Length: 130
Ligand SMILES: [Zn+2]
Image (cartoon, rainbow, N blue to C red):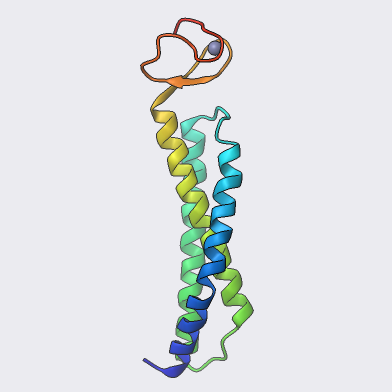
């Protein structure tokens, strides 16, 4: 492996700790909104878009790697920004997958809209028969 690429990978590794923190913060912020009722189909559209964006960021990171291999000066800020974006998107994708899974296991109360378990006989919030 060339030294330039090795240096680049060292830099990528060095950003990993901070990036994990950023991803956790994103997941926590998203978790607060998890109680809202949203349609699974809408979430699947969001998931599709996020996955597309995530792939694009990974493609750009690959491009930086190859450019470095070809002898181009690496752009540290660009790499850091791309890695942060990748972590953010990855966190959002995981969070969305969890929400979709949770919604598939649930049903909404027709009166108050509360999310209840699929097997629940009565609404957990208002007590209406389901
Ligand atoms: Zn209810």
